[in-house]
Length: 194
Image 1 (cartoon, one colour):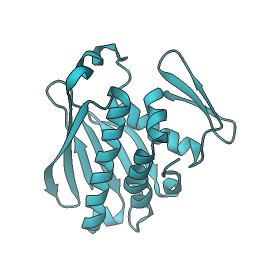
Image 2 (image 1 turned 180 degrees about the vertical axis):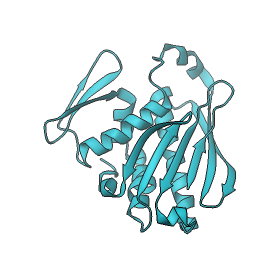
Image 3 (image 1 turned 135 degrees about the horizontal axis):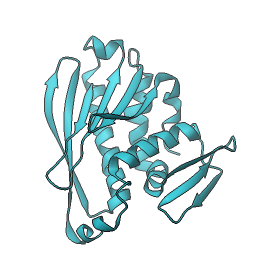
């Protein structure tokens, strides 16, 4: 199964969600599961976009193609209202793709548990300490995304539940053709609301 977010004219980007495993390779992934995963991934990207750019950002999703063992979804975000004036003020390194990647890395790092310590930095980043005392640095919107109830429910669906199904062993997200992050069946229990 593949879900793709396509680069738009000015304020779009490309994100590819792909599942791997025997059920996907054979084209036997349940259609209801696949559809629910597409919706959950779309919801996760919408919340990520709102955490990064504010609630005045509109994100739309369109199905672009169906193929054997995969299908794609275009997600384009469009800025409306006063938010357009905020975009140039954000650091270039913080994008929706970076926020999604950092959030998924943070879920894995926290192993499904709440952080024990959060320390905000001046550069839009945050040090997050897990229950083992280890520290990871992520961008601030990624922390807010990870701690968001709706985003947690979406991650539980398109990562946790998807990887718990027989025949689905791995989930991978790529942007602009470059791998961003992956999760495996063994990590499925880490992805849920924190």
